[in-house]
Image (cartoon, rainbow, N blue to C red; front, side):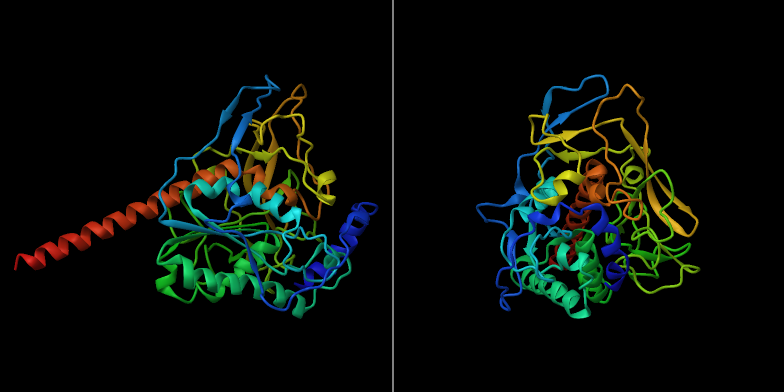
Length: 400
């Protein structure tokens, strides 16, 4: 976590100066419990299960007809476990367990699109805060406290709620960092648990691999995904517009934020392009929530308040390709529209060292959901096949 302290303060302090007056006053933190549930089946106010009505906005029509963008529910054989990125505006180094509006907003923005295919679980955890990044206060203890909350939530989920179901992990930024540690400590070491891993969507957190391999960095046994129906694999990338990440980039380079201490001559940051996995031939299917994000991120994200639906998609606006150059590995976001196209664009609002980190997930949300849906279907097919084989074996035994 020390890499956040190395560059995070200098980068953010300049770019968000004057915005920080909105930071929340410190409130008393609780030593116990270590987490609370933000999203869980049966919870009345669950931000992971919001409305998915989406307006498709093409270059030719700024106000296209609103159409539902709803996935077919795949049954309830699969769970999703989501860990959100750094959004807390609390002043302490670790957030308390209050359900601040930023948590609801980010869960709806990132996790809710996956919810038709799984039961969604997401903990409120004592994440290290924006204030901690700005003040270079992310000590080993601060990082351990944050991960401890995620791990405690995971242990409760596994013990009380999983009951042998398939699992999709979803994380971004700090959330990916904690899930990387969780995968390394659990799925990587436990073959029986690894059989239940449908997919690990670990975006914007510098998952690493050996060069020329699908494993050998962050994980030994959990490989990068090579096709949409592969199970037990990782989808990971960090996005940048056009040019390679600079040498001091937080993402896309070994040694960046949340990255293991590895040799860049032998290892690289993993880039799996979801717009290739899902058969879109590199065409991104962005999905953006149109509500104004509460707090300082509002000025750093596209303003979409002109649209009436909760969600908006921008087909044929961007393509994506995995690039590897100058010691960096990243998902290159390419604008394929013309000058007359008036649709809103994303930008590298935090500077080139961050790229399009704030919109990593939403730029490819339609593609990611499509891939995970294919993986969930493959998992259910695998379960059905195993059930038939078991029944056939039992039948043979009874006929002896």
